[in-house]
Length: 428
Image 1 (tube, rainbow, N blue to C red):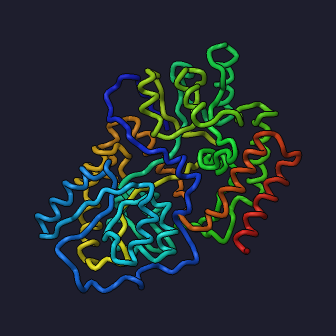
Image 2 (cartoon, one colour; image 1 turned 135 degrees about the vertical axis):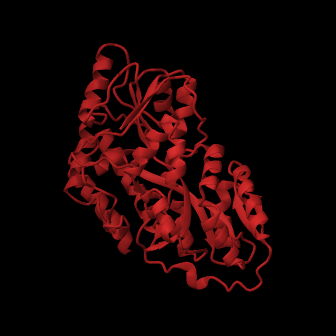
Image 3 (cartoon, one colour; image 1 turned 120 degrees about the horizontal axis):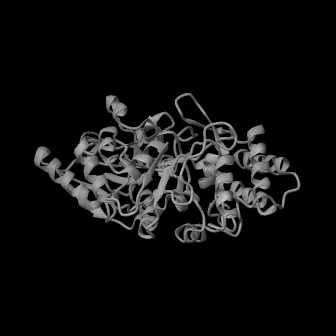
């Protein structure tokens, strides 16, 4: 899908965080895992009080206050919103929840789930029929080891941002995208056919993931319900080897579609300067693109390998502590108040993230950029939240970078070696 955005058009400002950066250090998301669910560790609700505590950040706090006030008016239970340094929330929560100093509820990205479940600090929730009211990928993201642990409220993913003044139409394949970009370069109207920012040490498996999945090489195998089997490395297959050859063919010693000298900051700078028609990025760079006065469109990245190009999806949501002494109140607030259309509308108005609740998304989709990223994300897959992802990122990124630099005489063998190294970590 595609939507064209004219500079200056009225739309809500994005304040999205750079999920791509966090993805590189993410620990895990949806799917299987060897850890036990935390429900059994939840204390009884004896000692419940008329106040529950929620950890949040400064950005989301104003919207949550409106919902908390309604909850207090309806139920007589106050929600004490505590603004925390979001960079430290996960570790603080793991440390403080067992001591009774943690909150009853917290807001968190889904890729924390594996670690939180492994540490027994979050409890499953029961969404029931409400699950159907959310984007399927968002519920999948909040599911770990077969149980739903959070109410999703926002979805983030990458897409192909196109300078519509340089290339005026969409294309059906990645080869066609590159060819269109190269024609602009050959005409002297741009310097780069395509921009993908790469980390100097780890490339960027997160941003490149839709290209990889188009070769049929998912990081882990997935079941019919979308859950991951983290015991099965999915990318150790023929598709993965073909993707490795693709990176080498289009790297520093090939077509230079992927350039190891182009970091994320440089890619953004070059696109804002009009030096490329294409930039593979997320909505967090939209404000700068608008400020630069670029007429742009947001397209789904077309396939490079013949299969669907599925980006990773990041989901934010609300979790309940397994150590809460206010279990009933915390669940009531999370499941029946933070899941409402009014709540998800307010959170969108405050933060600009595409809502996970379908009814709220339909309204938010009046903004064409929100609509475009949201619809592309609906075709994506949750970033795995299982702790096993810790064993994947380093080898994955380093191998991609080596392939792009042209350091591998046998790309398929390099990819296989990478996969074997990762699998050895699983077994070791």
